[in-house]
Image (cartoon, rainbow, N blue to C red):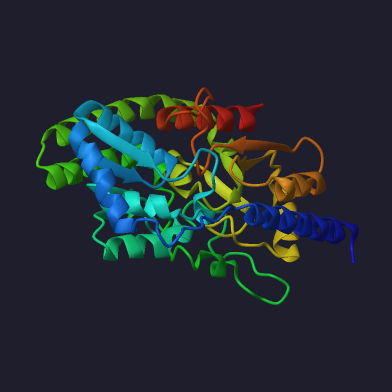
Length: 347
């Protein structure tokens, strides 16, 4: 066995241990037999919001939470975001209180296309109990996984298993639409219209249009940053298949991914990692863009095996940053990512 393969296998094992440790740290909620039911709790929550005035909204991801929050801040109401900052949406599960909030809300804003794979059962249960669930991504002309990729044929491991298996949770459509700001602007308009339908208040439509206008204006700055990179340098290596929309819209090519799948929960084979190292060397790649929501051990191992002058640059991929960070809002997140990509590829 070669030194490269031993190193990559060791990194793969280390990455698995980190993910296992993260999974093991999850807490569970124990309910007593005297606790109110989810439907009862939801009713109390809805009554409280109605008394305060405005719509009660639950959003799953931090990106959707921020955009929906701008609409509701303008028109009135309350938004609860299920996922904390920095959490990977692929591996998040809801508490019983959060399920109750979904049941009692006027609207539950969900990304969809399998992004919130850990919420599948919770969303189904909430829907069956009357929750008004609105999936945004399927309505935004989603692209197929592999758009912008160096090769759409995918990697295969030593036993011939295709990385397409890593798309099982998502299907063939890419849920990471927020990397196209014009799609996110359209999402804002759709959310506003849905809130108007749910409440009868046209203010949500009007405020959503204002939010969408702000996003489209900020997209011009993001576009300028990303297009400042010479065309022959617009080559990305990422931690998993999440930047397809960015590549498709701004003329970038995705040469490879550390995890050749649309979810961080998949595991690359040693052959996948060795093939990526070979691609990086052949293409003269100088940066690997990782994910602030996921461990970077595998990306760092690939960078080390690929040679000198390979930087691992964390992007805000699956979540906004903490309050006060350079990615505390959706617009700031996109601006910061564009800056990091432009500097990483030209530095």
